[in-house]
Length: 118
Image (tube, rainbow, N blue to C red; front, side, top):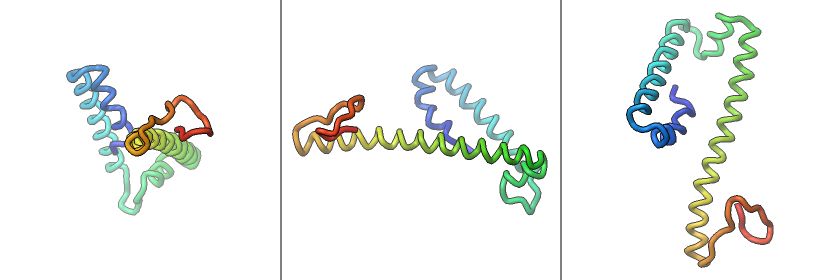
């Protein structure tokens, strides 16, 4: 139930300070707790997925909306994770490339096919 929101917590603490960030994280935790509680309360014993609960409680139309928005959210977070992995790997490849060749990689902002670039 944590989700991808945890990716922005370091930035939250950096920009807003410890006290305000702790208040926000506590509020997010309470919202997550209440959401999980509602899911547990409304789930029947034969329903093993939230999708079935949405279909039973809200009908086929909202079930389709739920599935479409869930798919879009999954694609978006997949893209965010992909960019984070690329940024991490760029730093590591730059370090190894500099140690072995003595030259630095081209900046991440430049795209060229003459040299190794991001």
